[in-house]
Image (cartoon, rainbow, N blue to C red; front, side):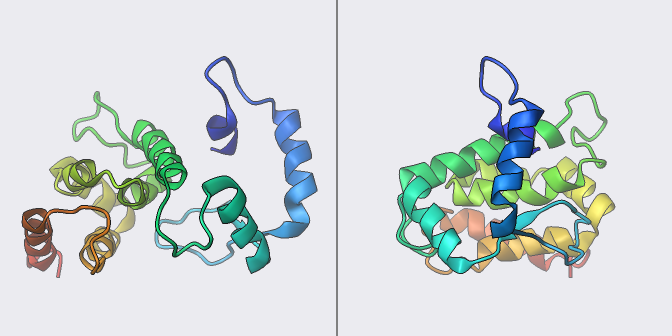
Length: 178
């Protein structure tokens, strides 16, 4: 995934460059060891909070992770969302989503929400094929967690319209999801 995301339009990111970059950053990164609901492995986090703040400041132009989102922040999440959409969606599959792409199904709603792609996020979460793929590969609780993520965004800075939130709340309350 990292190599795919670091690649440019004119080619792939050389594995040797990634190896050197990772080795230089390794003391400042830590693996996320907890077994997540989506079974994802290989995820990394910052070892020190100061480094996280420096990255937010320098690359995302935000003073802190909870600061108002910048255009760079939204663009970064839009790029990640597009990557996970292309990894998880398959027009040739019967339900149009790949159940073997667990991480893509897990990450997609999060990045769509933080990219402030509200209509796309609602379209994803109300797509029966997405719901079936996510529930069959990760369990219903994972799908419910996506609904809860959107519905608990009390200040609604990401532009989820009230009628969409109501529709998601109704889906969330459905007996099969409760």
